[in-house]
Amino acid sequence: MIYKFIKKFNRSVLALSFILLGFVSCYDNGYEEFVPPTGNINNIQPSTLFTTSTDANDNLTMVFRSYSTDAASYLWDFGDGTSSTEANPDYTYAKGGEYKVKLTTTSTDGLVAVDSSIVAPVFVDFNFTSVDSKVTFENLTSGAKSLVWSFGDGETVTWESEDTELDADYNPAYIYKTADTFVATLTVTTFLDVEVSVSKNIEGLVLSTVPDFTFDVNSLEVQFTDASLFAVSYSWDFGDGTSSTELNPKHTYATKGTYNVTLTTTNEAGVSQSITQGVPVGGVDATFAAVILNGTIDEWVPGVYHKDDNNDAWEPVPPSKFKNGQESPYAWSNSDLKSNAGIKAAGITTSENTGTHALKFSGAERRAYQPFKVEVGVEYTISMFVRTETTDDFTIYMLNNEVSDESDLTGNSDAVYVVSGNDNKYKEYTFTFKATTETAVFYAVPFSGISSSSEVYLDDISITTPGF
Image (tube, rainbow, N blue to C red; front, side):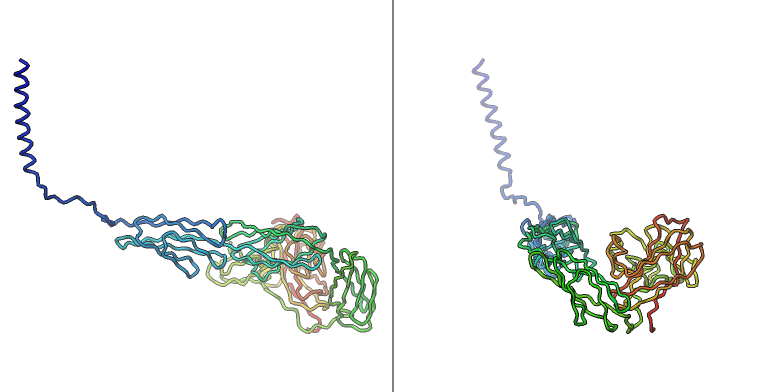
C-alpha cells in the first residue's frame, strides 16, 4: 500500500511541473521597469514659509530657515535693498531697524510661492567720557523703538523713537553725586518689543561741585541766591567789572541791560566749576512781539466731523487728518508730558465768551498748553476770559521750559496766577510775567475735584508785548 501511494504522488508532481513550465514559457521577458512620475503632476500650488531668529552672538545677524514645499530655487529680499538665493541664509544687517523680509520660491514646474515676515535687528552699545563727576554718554545704538538709561544710582532717563536722535535723552549728560563706581545700563526695546541691554562700569569719578543760582531783580538791584551742590567757596562775576565771594550777594547795577553773571564754585577737593546766566536789569526793551507757537487753542474747523477725531485744542498726539480727510490744525508735541502726567487736552465748547469756541475743562486730567517765543527779561501781559461753575481755584502757570512731568510746576514757572471766586460768569483776568528763557509756556490746570457738573471755561487768551 505504501509503495503504491508514493508511486502515484511522483506522477502528480511530474504533471504539475510540466504545467508550470508552460506558464514560464508564455512570460514576456521584454518588460520596462515602472518609474513613478516626478514634479507637480496635479498642478498643486506649492507653499513657502520660513522662520527667523537672532544670532546668539550678534543682534544684527538674523538666521533665516525655509520650510518650503517643492522649492527648486530661492530668492530672499532682506528689506534693505539686498538679496540672496541661498536656501537658508544667515544675514547681517548694516544697522538696526525694522525690515520686511520676503522669500520667493519657484518649484520644479515653475510655480511661485511667497512668504514675508518683519524682523527687527538691533545694535546696542555706548561710549562715555567724564569730567569730574559729570559723565556724557554717546549712544551708538541703531534699531531702537525706545530705550532706558539707568545710571546705576537709581536714576533713569527714557527715550522714544518719535523724539528723534536729536533729543537730549538720546545722548544724556549726567552728574553723579558721589565718586563711587557705578554700573550704567542702556536697555533698548526693538520694534518687535524685544529688550536688549548693555552695561559698563563708570569709575574714576572725581566729586565735582555743581554751580547754580537764581536771582530776583528789582529795578537796578539784584538779589542773587546760591543753589549749588558740594560748594565750599564762591566767586561771583557780575558782568559789569565787579565781583563778590559772598554766598548770596546783593548787587546794584549802574545802568539797565542784560549782564552775563558767572558763578564759580569750588568743592572740598579743590575742583572748580562755573555757570553763566544772562540777568536782565532795569527792564529790557523787546525787539519783537511774542510769537505764538502751534497757536490752535480755540480753533474750530467748521463743517467737519469732530466727535472721536481726537481733535481737542492742543491735542498731545494730534491726528494728521480729520475723518473727512481734511488736515487737522491741532498740534501739541510734548508727548512726555502727556504720558508722564496722564493728561488730556481741554475740549472745545460752543459756550464761548466772544470767540468762535472756548476751551472746556470737564475732568481733572484736562489741560491747556501753549508755547510762546519770547525774550529774556521782557515783561509780558497775559489776558484771558474765565468762567467757572464752582468757586474752586483755576491755576495758570507760565512755564519757562517745556516740562516732561508735573512734579514741580511752580519751580519751573516765571509766574503763577490763580483764578478763584468766579461766580459762573465770563470775566477778564490779566497778569504779567518776566521771561527768564526764550520759550514761555501757558499751562492751565483745573482744580482736582473738577467734573462734568463743575466745569471751567477758558477763552480769548492773548499775550501783549510792551512796545508792540
